[in-house]
Image 1: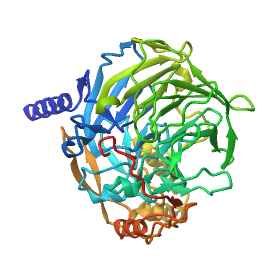
Image 2: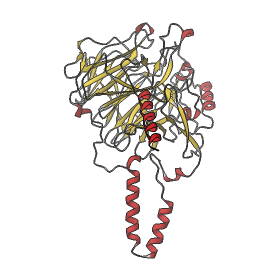
Image 3: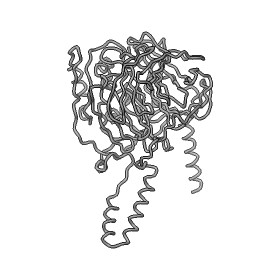
Length: 509
């Protein structure tokens, strides 16, 4: 028995070493997503592979690599010391946000699953990853989450762990068709109770768009900037703001030194009410940007400024990420000129606007991701058993009062059921199957689990009409065929003319 136990422990350690390895220089990538959880920076997915030399020589693939970096310690930006795992679905152009009772979950929504044969993922692309659980599994949220999309945005309101998703385009293989439909709906995800809802539109709701940025600040407001809408780039003076506290949109025209209109840029928010953007690309992908622009939202009139940075600035890029860590903004990866991607990180000290070769953690309390509210939270899976046991113990104590109370307690105990991340009690009785993704090296292992049923029927999206009168009949038919049999909610989008532009994949002109 002892020998078997030692063998089991040794095998587990070897597997852990294989699955979690130092990756000093990850593969170059773009179209990935990043988020900060406590003192760790997480980056997931994206496009990787040989740089595109021509349309017929495209070897790029979607990745399922999860990169983790401890940002509580100093490091050389040329050699950060990544920890790497291959786990979950292969995806690009998705969003990564956080949630859960202690904001311990990675929340992956949407994206392009071109390399996946898992239809359940295509129909229900909302997954949770518990960063506090060593089992390292992506769990399907089992929610009807609207029309599958990519190139959208997501933010987290830290004090109540609410996620907000805006915009994007449908996930169909033909990007020229996909870009014709631009979503303008805003979804809210309660990550504690696993509930999903669509927010009401109002006169200030932005037009449908993609390749934009959305940044939430400590005032609880989400700032939507730039991107591609209808058939043009959005002017950078147009700032759309969603107040998550009062659940309404507002609009303001920013002044100052405006950045050039762009798409596929990156943005991050500061502790003192500013949004910093970096990079991006022009409408026709012929001009890449490497500038740093700051939007000051603390004044009654929003003001733009272009910062003159010091130090060795990174090359111009797009489809990269920007993550605020204390007062440092970390830029990761992205697509460069000459059809090549980057595998490097860059650290910008936003107090001096200096690009530093050495990252030093500063003011990490400014970006603490722990919930900032004292409102009681629904228990997570890690303590659900303890609370359930305490509840049963209390009921057992009171059952000594009399026989009638004992019978009542017995009936309650027999019907008791607890499930982590279950939206409603009625969802737990159906034996339908879904899938979760477990750790594997270089591939995705799939394991069957019981899941809630999704019984509502297909809601055909309401098609809009663009200003030029194009109704997009062909696309609507295509979209309906793709979603036939899936469970979606009412979705707002607008139809725009076909465009010859490369709109989503840098490797797909």
